[in-house]
Each structure stands twice: as C-alpha cells, then as structure tokens.
Length: 91
Length: 175
Length: 118
Image (cartoon, rainbow over all chains, first blue to last red):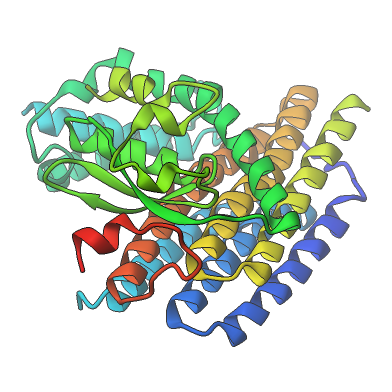
C-alpha cells in the first residue's frame, strides 16, 4: 500500500518561525541576570524544540520524530526538575 | 493483588495506545498484543508499590478518570484560552501589578491539590509558587492584582476563576 | 479545502502565541512575570501547532484508511499531553526553587510567602 503524503507548503514557514523564536530565546539565556532566568529560558527553548520536532515529522515523513519529541519532553522535564532542585539548594 | 492488577492494566493500556496502528487485529499486530501482556505483567510486578503506595483505589473507578478528559477539554480549555489572551494583552501593554497571595484550596487529597496547582499554573494570571503541605494551602504569584486585594489575608479557590468553577470539578474528580 | 484552512489556522495561532511567549520572556521585568509568559503562552502555542499535526493525521487517515496516520495522530496527541503536563510541573518547581534561593519578585505589591517563610 503506497502512501501519498500530501505536499502542503505551509509547514515550512511554521518551522522556520519556530527556529527564529528559539534563536530569540537564547538572548535571555545569555543575558539573564540570575541562574533561574536562564533555567526559564532553557525551558522555553525545550518547549519550542518539541513543537518543531512534531512539525518536522510531517515534513520529513518520519513518524519516529514524534516519538523522539515525546522522549525529549520527558527527559527535559527530568533535567529541569534537577536544575530546580539544585537552585533550591536541596542537593 | 489489586495494586498489581491496576498497575498491570495501566501499563498494558499505555503500551497498546503507543503501538496502535501496527497491524490488523483491531489496530494491533499479534506480536504487539503478546508484548503488551508480557510487559504489563512484568511492569505490574516490579512497580506496584509506586503507583498505589497509599493503597487507596478511589481513582480506579472509571467514572472518575473518564471525567478527566471532559474536564480538560471543557472548562479547563476555556479558562486556558482566556489566560492566553490575558497574557498576550499584558505582554503587549506591560500593564502589570504583580504579587504573591495565599489561597486556601480546601482540597483534602494530594491528587486534588496537585490538579488544582497545575490548573492554576495554566489559567489566567496566576502561577503556583509553593504548597503548604500540612494544610494544602497554595502560594500563588498573580500578575495583575486588583487594587486593594493586597490587604486580604486569604483567598478561596473559587475567586481565581471567572468562567468556570474549576475547584468544584476537581473535587468531583479527586474526592 | 476546509481542513487545509483549519490546519493553517492552527499553525498561525500556535506560532503567534509562541511568539508572544518569547516576546514576554524578553520584555518582562522579573523572573516570575517572565515565567507567566513562557509557561502559559508557549504551552498553548505548542498545543496548537501539534493540534495541526493531529488534524492532518486524522484527515488523511479518514481519507485513505492507512494506519500509519493513526499512529501519527495518536503519538502527536501523546506529545500534547506530555507537553502540557511537564510544562506546568516544571515551571512550578522552578518558581519554588527560585523563591527558596532568595530571588524575590521585584516589582511586587504583596508577598505572603516571604512573610510565612522568611
């Protein structure tokens, strides 16, 4: 059974916009006066990376990208919790 | 025994959801169904003390956990929409008046306090900063406190939501 | 045709709210207000961009009956659930840790938490 993935032109600008936003978040990552500000910026970057991975799955026609996005979401959650523990002085 | 059965069923269901679309018995292939049963039994045997460590089986009632999607799609999504329009307005105009307030949640179970805290984080103008674990009181950072509200000692959960009564929904689900 | 417009609408809403979230991250004056922008706006925006993929998967699954697209749909839904859940919890953890480490909300009219735990 051959599959026709419809060529839809508007996925590309959406991913391009998300990549620009990831670039913009890194301004706060560099500037942020406190470590907690940087952690918040990393959290925002993680969310945007997950969103763009789900869109890239449609562009590259690979469903495995969505699975990678799920695993990335869970791993970045664990790493953020560890950063938070470290910042709160519990480690 | 009940803990083992519940954990095994949850793990099996998760595996089946992840592999839907792999074959043609229903939507699954035979090998995936066998793997689901095997992994469910192993996961249930290993982790039964984690999922049910209080040995309270109130959430095993299907009426309760089937209410969660209804809650998320209905009242919670409405509040979330309003929250995002509110944040958009604050970002563009920078009219903010922030402060940390104390809210009496009135939740009796951990799951109730957890769900209320997460709902508050994603709904209008508020994020949860801390929980008093003895009384389940929440400390909430509010981005735009109305004039005069900084004098109040306590807030109730119902005062935070304008469109729908989310604490009542959570009480219906978790208590 | 209508479905394509729906997908386009979802993408536009998602990217717009993501942009507002990042703009808030850059503009707001202190940590907690920045957290308002990133948590709410980027979660909502990412839910909508992923919802575009869900609509696309459902559309082609109903048109061709190919189960590959059912997998795409369900996995995108799981990604949405994972995203919403993990973002809320991790922002709460970060806010709590920041307040513990002594970062107070700078423009603030009241701070009940600092009164309880000095």
